[in-house]
Length: 223
Image (cartoon, rainbow, N blue to C red; front, side):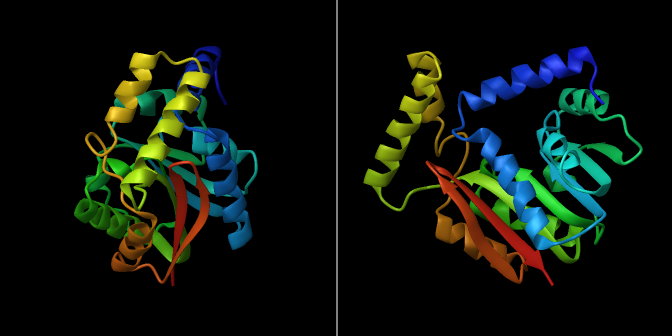
């Protein structure tokens, strides 16, 4: 599906993210594994904050998909995704998450490292949109940075995260700038709060299925 230019863009984009997020590839593998375990076939899938299509890359190689919808607020990201996934099963939507208005159209909704840019109340509003987009028995899956329960936990977690980035050969200034964004440019909540807001948004099932460093994987099921 990908031409040489878009493939290069994909590799460069993923390489930069992998310098920042530990086990980045595992986020997508675990998402696909969970969708498989949920047992649905011929899936309609909505990926919010799709970027250049990493989720689609992994999903199409492993799952029977009849429809895959890419949503991102960046026109550039969507244009790259279009080049990479020119397929009759794909569709593309340039819009803010707040403007999503799908109603009971999808078996799966994913948001990988997207929602932490919203404050807690906004997160609930966003989750309600995801809930509305899902069909009966649909599953919502997300990965987010999370807030530790104590100041010590936060300090140690951020120091460990900075050490990871340094090991990935990012500059010390660049690493510290990234760490300084925590709670300032994006707004993590605790793992307990992640489950609470899934319930508040209407999900009948709210669970944690993956934790590593300062990232957590959560899912909700709509009955």
